[in-house]
Length: 216
Image (cartoon, rainbow, N blue to C red; front, side, top):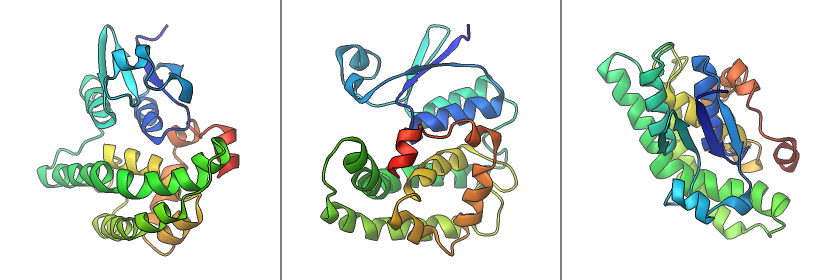
């Protein structure tokens, strides 16, 4: 049995980011799949007081927050590295992670994906068109900014994949199945970058559940 266990809801881009990181490292792990009904249960809150996912357990050590998990994995399993050695490239990767966590996910990706895919198709909730419309200005800013940062590079850290690529790739693979996401990425340098990310074995192995794909 693997000494690493990951808790989360299959299809979550945050859980998927951790799974991708583990696969890229060649590390075996056990997935403790959760359902929406498990969220914020007493057992869940005991492991994550903010009621989010994913959570990683490793030989008695527990940690949550996606980027913290990925940074931890990168330190204890250093090959292949997921952070560049160059200070400027590393700063740029950290900048992209900050954009994802502070602006892109909460103010753009989450409102659009929830109201186009998760809410109406999986939970039976009506789409909130106003929430989608309100998210679009931030979404446009994020796509434009990230496109500019990527530039002509293969990855956000240059020629090797980083934590920023993993986290953004997992987010965009879901968001760009919506009409809004497809329009936003069209014609940007993020489009060929995402297709390149999706061909990696780690992305292929962590495809969202069929129900989520069909909903999209």
